Amino acid sequence: MPRTRRRAARPGAPHVTCSRRRTHPWLRATRCTAAALLWTAVAAVVGVAVLVFVIPQARAGSGLTILSGSMRPAIDPGDVVAVRGIKPHQVCDGTVAVGDVVTFMPHTDDAALVTHRVVAIHTDPVAPDGYADRTYESCAFTTRGDANTVDDATLPARAMKGVVMYRVPKVGYAINAIQTHGHLRQVAIGVSAALGLAAVWFAVGWRRPEPEPEPEYYL
Image (cartoon, rainbow, N blue to C red; front, side, top):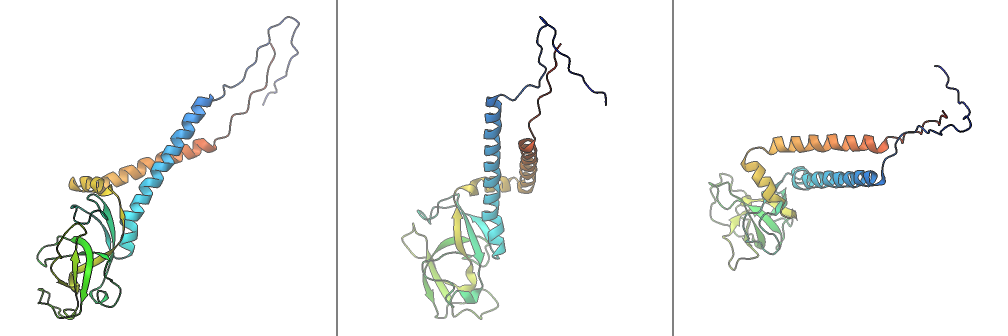
C-alpha cells in the first residue's frame, strides 16, 4: 500500500481539514429512544406470551379469555386467566379449597367453560352427570360468581377442569380478535420475525464502533 506523506503547509496557503462527519446528538438521542422502545415492546410481547401460553400449558392448562362480568371486581371482561389443569380426585383431597377460582364445564353436551369461585366442596353423592366413569360421584363442588347473588348448580368433581393461577388484564380482546379471523399463527410469526430483525439491526448498530477520524492533510 503506498504511503501518504504529510507535506508542510506553505506560508499563506489555506488550511484544509479532511475528516468524517460525526453523528449529531439528536440523532443519537433518537436512536437510543427507539432502541429503548423496541426492547420494551419485545419484553412486553415475550412476557405476555409466556404468561398466557407457556406457563399454563406447562401446568397442563391453558389461557382463557373472560367474556362476562360475573367475576367482577376480581376479574373483568377481556382479562385472560391462566388455568392449571386438575384431576377429579384433587377436588376433594385438599388441592382445591373454598375461595379458589376455578374453571369448569357445567354441561357434558356443551364445551363452554365457566370461571367462578368455589363456595363449597361436598363429599355426599350427587346425581349422575352423564359420564360413564362414576368413581368420583361422591365428590362435588358449588361455585358462584363474585358479582352474582345466587350459587351455581352443584357439579361433580369431573366437571372441574382447572384452577386459576393468575390473570393478565385486557389482553384477551386482542387475542380473541386475532383468533376470530384465524390469523393467530400468521400474526405471531410476523410479529416475532419483525421484532427479531429489528432487534438484530439495533444490536449491531449499537455495538458498531465510532469511525476514527482521518488524518489531517495540509495543501
